[in-house]
Length: 460
Image (cartoon, rainbow, N blue to C red; front, side, top):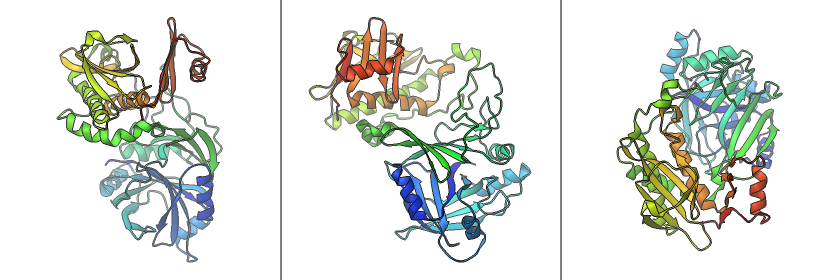
């Protein structure tokens, strides 16, 4: 069915005033167009498919859609996108629901483009607040602004969370191991939390859940990844909006499209694979001593090669293949390396070393990225290569990307003092034996700490 969160519908009185509120918070909000039923919308979105729809009545006429919008304010409904609406409706019928027959829908954009879809109400009427509705895009929107917000998580407080959970489960969503009817985690899409969470199952096992509080006063809250600025939380039109800056704020992220193009060629027939623990379920004990397919991790090495190719072809770096025994490392390493390439940028930058190591029968199955001379390890993937630590190809590839983006960003990379060390990451830092890691980095950046500091100029 390919079911996934599509958009949150938020009713407002005046579209221009609502758009101004969201823009004032640093979130682009642009006119989306008009529907044949007389409603108009503004969209808050970015390069990913999911978005927030601000909707208002644009006509004095009366019909079920206009009347519903006029009588409500704030979040009133939400949509689940499906690839096969008829199949999804059949699944809901089999689960005991009574969804309406599909009907066509459309919107004319400000530049005259006609977007079309089929829609199916699951609840008793249009924009019903108790259950989501289904949408199948037949002429979908293109991506939004590259620097626009990306919806990562939505938390809702429906009147009957168990009923909503039944809908999601019937459509193929997977409930979390600890909150199987309240949390639906999607690593590559929008995760959904239904409040209240209640008591977790398997309380003896460790877990984490975003937006765990049941005390949120607003009927809906969302987490948005943004391209720049500071993290913040603000209430807009009865939606609690939390923003977290993502890696797009780093100049190196601009190289990702070129890296993707090179990677598509260099990966050959190496396949992606899903997260083997998608629902928060802990690994089985035997997975810690099992490596099902070490060859799969060669995909990470191809990603590193794609970065090297792009950086050298664009003139950002020169690359030198080194004897692995001639490159010294600081930090955890995976045995002896098959090969090492050292990247050097303009004056003032720190060299970046990239190494590949074998895993059992697979050559170049581990990838390591370090900065400085000797090379301080920024990232080493996969973590150990066992099945228990496998988080799926998408997550591991993103980790490799993050290491290169951080390496290109410059600034303070590492601060060490004896056996204690702090390493900067894209979203903060990691440390060993240090309780005030952020202060170590801040002191190094301000020049108050100079010994044991690995820092350099930005590459880009």
